[in-house]
Image (cartoon, rainbow, N blue to C red; front, side):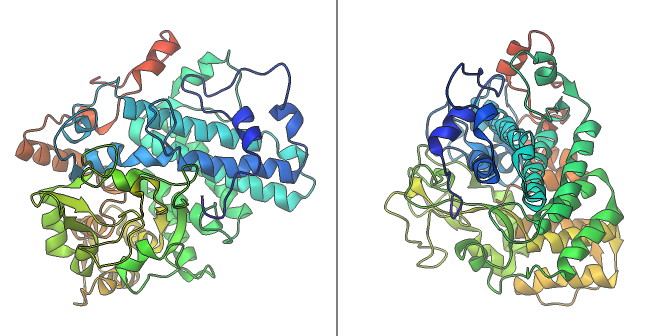
Length: 476
């Protein structure tokens, strides 16, 4: 992870190990433990950094490893109308055809990965008392609560009611580990955590939590809950604030000039190091990664981008140069920033790519600002909304003056602006359009969508380990 390195690798592996079933490691009888290691701020910062390492995930093909955010596109983009597999084979094809089963290993990997991230955040929060400097303690608390909220926000939107674990639990606390609580309780914790983060943090970092990142994420949480005014206020604080955030002049530079002024929060990766690189962008190539093409662009997304993408279209997808009937995502070619949209130069080993994964950027704040002002209505001519919307359009070369914005206009603009950035599924859910869009898309392509597919199944191994405590989502 760029500029965020694990300081004590052995400690991290001993103290905060990745777990599949209970997210905890049996307490060792000797050696380094959380009970005797964390004695000051420097030592606790190793655990803070390790939270981001958990989100980053492990660049491997080992099914027993937690891959963090590197598997997220399967659960989001490939369950929307944006992407698909090349050959409709294996577990990956279950997502595009709405045939996901409870034993899907990719689903289990993501679920375990993000509960492991929550565990890492809880380790930090449980050891804040070792810090003498109250400002440092507040900052670490803010970072840990941002990370925990980020993980829970992803999980609750994908799985619905889930277990709420807000502290480090013992292996015997199976009731906490497996008891699903109502979504409202999860959102209460998310809001509380992000409110703390907003107060505690500044805008020092782009690959660690910041004040603006907490504000932007909380705005999206509020929009998801239909709390429009507080979302609007948060967006306007970022827009008018001193963080220095703005749109890049060229859409291409958003993705290939990393940690630029548009980036609010990104997961950092570093090229060439198996410990800090990613392979998801290689997975999207034909025969480059360990697959033969996943996250390929659908005809539906191509049509939307061709019609409304403007200058963004050429940098969003390209025809596969080795199989001209297929279309690849172009925003994350492995370390490719030479030769334009149709001919990038890749690293010698694309599976060790260093492209950062962008979670929040300023364009999202501008369009969330429009959404907050729209407030669930059918359209708006509000001048502040028009200004934010027009700024996005102008960057795309679509400079015709907009005088009214409909809900459909905004949803389309979000689709072409954030295509293949794992936002489409959540946007459709938040706008209340997922059922209609996925039904039509499924009928067109001969898929088997039903309303129960809006949520993923809880991993079957978790159901089994719970011994009857954990229930499954309907339809699985």
